[in-house]
Length: 248
Ligand code: PEP
Image (tube, rainbow, N blue to C red; front, side, top):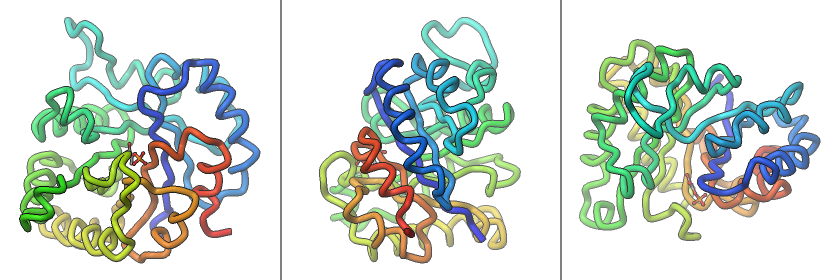
């Protein structure tokens, strides 16, 4: 019912030509994947990668978007600028942006609404730190991120949520499949309360945090997990393709 979505987050890796080489290697490897396959690339790589992806089953994503339509926001990129190059998805509120670039639930909300308004699909990242998990605050942290970050969305199933426990990102420490399943189940329940239970059932929720070619099958076998947001392992065509072909 919910089509799984495997998205790569290249972060600040790959020049445009390296990005093109990577997607050219990836295209034949994921051509028969049953899930949606997405690569979220650095903004400056978008034109070249968009061209290279033409005619393939890989969708293009960005890693951030500004909330204003246009104007005096030096260095920023609007949703319409992304759309013009065929961008379909945009990561919003990644923990690195929350940690290093002052992203808050309020700005996540503004970006999410702006992306939806322009017809982009936001991949909204939420997740707790290690300290928050160890002190029993996981649910209250998620409650706030979901309540404040997703306010005013008309059709919640139009977005994708990525549950990314901060302690599992880029650390090699993966949440166990049970932990990830349980927390994503919690997120779905909360979305049901905030929006509607039926919409929550339609919403795709990914797991992100050191997902790789070795652990993807087990994670993807869990009933609540609808895909992955993949950092490190998305930089190698073979590894990312193994994840996208997790059910083969
Ligand atoms: C991410 O950047 O969203 C991520 C999950 O990174 P990694 O897979 O490297 O942990």
